[in-house]
Length: 113
Image 1 (cartoon, rainbow, N blue to C red):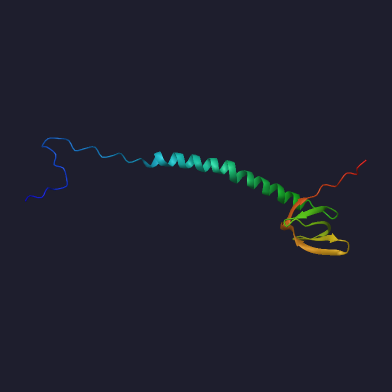
Image 2 (cartoon, rainbow, N blue to C red):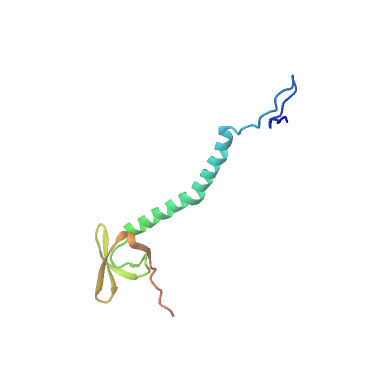
């Protein structure tokens, strides 16, 4: 009993079968760079712009401004220090908060006619 080998034997003089081509390094880099560029312009850059505007808004806050905290609590700034605000949240109740916890400014309400 003769066992056969699992590999094929090619006839003499025949060219070896062409190996599948491997994609080049540059062929893979171009789509990856395009994806990263799209991600940057669609996600990262707008977020940086919003954060810059938020920091500018916080720097411009002064006493008397009505603000909203990140947790949704609202109050009026009594006085500002370099890193914190003293905010009145109820008549006679003043708390100290970090400037970073301010999420927005409440526009003054116009009287109804």
